[in-house]
Length: 71
Image (cartoon, rainbow, N blue to C red; front, side, top):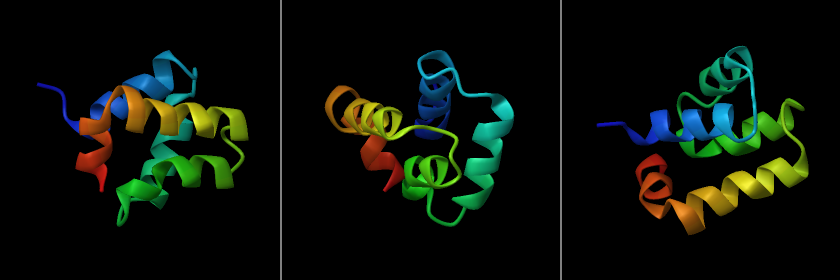
């Protein structure tokens, strides 16, 4: 069974085509507060504002169970 972080990582790779290195960097920066991962990706310029919106839509509309597990 996939965990919430794995499902989000798969979404970032498969849908937004983020590199593994970008995702690892963001996870390291957001390690203490995983809920900040989308903001961390945006802060570091790894995603656009439009992609940030896609992540929030995915988390809260399509997969709310993942969003709840990150918070």
